[in-house]
Length: 296
Image 1 (cartoon, rainbow, N blue to C red):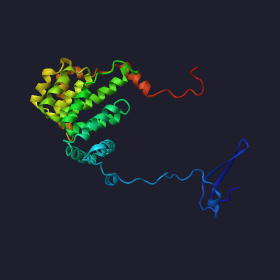
Image 2 (tube, rainbow, N blue to C red; image 1 turned 120 degrees about the vertical axis):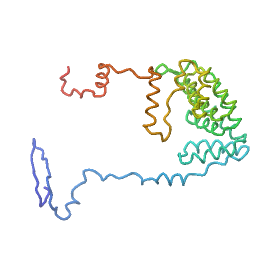
Image 3 (tube, one colour; image 1 turned 135 degrees about the vertical axis):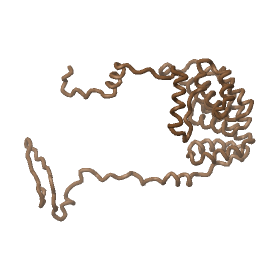
Image 4 (spheres, rainbow, N blue to C red; image 1 turned 60 degrees about the vertical axis):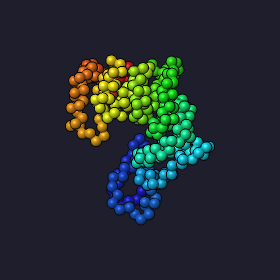
């Protein structure tokens, strides 16, 4: 029997004692030690980590990209891993380090080899390597990106939902490569990007080429006209595609979107029919389990 100086209700149900403790005003000394804890006090398995700002301060220094030979090769590989985990606050540092070795031969060659080596086994690492090549804007890096884009797309492979996974993965990497070439912003790069927009077998890569070309020409009228000359008729809509830029307010963006939809009404999704709405609602609110077999 639990002794208390407060109120307690003791009931019996089918021969089993059930104690309902409604209110304990002041338990006797030592009573708290006698009562077992029903639930342990929540506690973290490990102490809280440092704030994001301190994480950036405590990050390891970037590998030295100015080294030559085997050391330079190893440092370039390590730099890919370092850059992959770099927070946005270090974007400018990454750009500065890569621009400082633009004429280096070891770094872009290593980045290129790693992108090719991992394009099947480590998609994310290949994306990072291609991004770094584009950011370098070196001639050796541009040559690698061009060859990467010219790889034939797989015609067979693992099919999921009607898509060949190996083909989709390579398309994604080639889209990243065309962004890097467009970023070079020179005549040779522009001509290559326009050729990709016109002739590449992948619609995804072609449309990414359109977006990259327009972005690197500040969405100028000259840039739009250059793309319109080579883009396929059913893909010229991507020239007018509205891009919301960083810091752009809805008051400025929404009218642009409205004008786009007026010029391209085919981009407006059809109004859903009532049966489609009901079907969607039924999927979102499933019936409760039939515990009592009433639906049989």
